[in-house]
Image 1 (cartoon, rainbow, N blue to C red):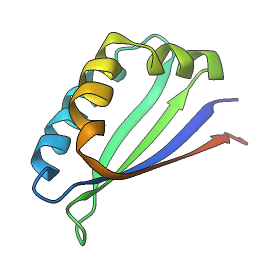
Image 2 (tube, rainbow, N blue to C red):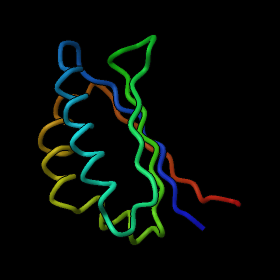
Image 3 (cartoon, rainbow, N blue to C red):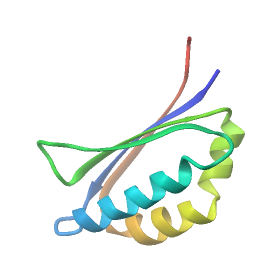
Length: 96
């Protein structure tokens, strides 16, 4: 079964476009990962500083590869995350 990650990121005021751009680049690179099944980034229509990321991987190990990838380090940890006001993650397994 797939390993699923649901993440929410809230950009600091005035940093929402920087975070959005980082997520576009992060999503494109992540979808090319061997163990990535799906990586979809969303932006709230009602709260434009809020982002939702839905990810599916072939396994938890594949997610670990993603979390340690050069593109996650660059676009996530170095570019976007320092400009977040809040961040949350939940992990799931696909049932069917």
